[in-house]
Image (cartoon, rainbow, N blue to C red; front, top):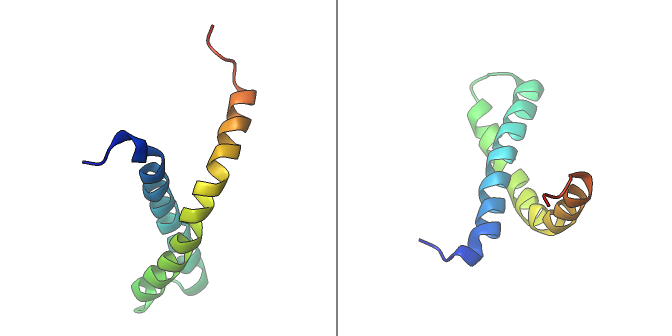
Length: 76
């Protein structure tokens, strides 16, 4: 188990991995279809996308939290 202070990084790691997996899968399918090399191209695209997505999530998360805080009503 990791200490609680790592929760935001772990959340970003898992979220970026899942989202990049889905998006790269859809993009790969649209580009080449379900041919014999689909899995190879998908996994290759996923690794590249995750390498970009994870650091990007860590950078944009604080900005996104501030935007969300301004868009929702705070409990009194």
